Length: 110
Length: 121
Figure 1 (tube, chains in turn yellow, brown):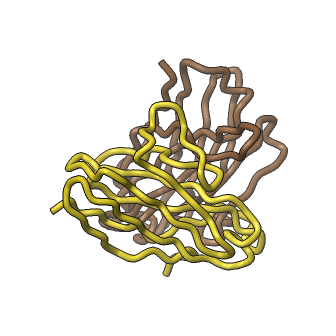
Figure 2 (cartoon, helix red, strand yellow):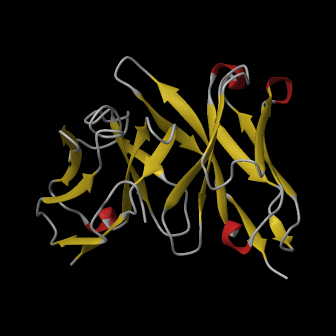
């Protein structure tokens, strides 16, 4: 059971906008910043969004993040087939004194 | 090229020990905090441990506290994870990850390719 809760799956068609959620508590998301990672099968995760809504250099602006209270969201607009991957949210947890991840959302592009 | 390369994984019996290494290149290793993260087969990511730039601040997840030890050697640009009393549930791909900071926040911006650890008799 992950400290941060993500839906196990999400789907969309090419060109569509999809969002995925990440729910936490006041010990983590509520008082801190959220990062999002993208992972393709058999590869290392890649930083997609940090500090709730910041994109590292090279990440397309189709990807955006937001946070409200103890929840965060990742949105992908103009969905492409190559966006099919697993997406993880993460945040620092003040109670556990460590980084906590969500269980991940598997995105399928139909 | 900025790169992290893990090594040291393999098959070990329950109760055994293993030492993982993470070699950094392409950046000034001593300036960055580092982490270990693992991923069990078919499962999600699990953060394990953090070490500050000078090694004076260390954190562990409850799942490995008392069994795993993180360390770094800036002269060798290397990060280590000493794993003792290994259990079947420690079977996973182990990643090292660099901590990136800017004025907005911090995150794991560079990851190694991972090294597989299998705990089985």
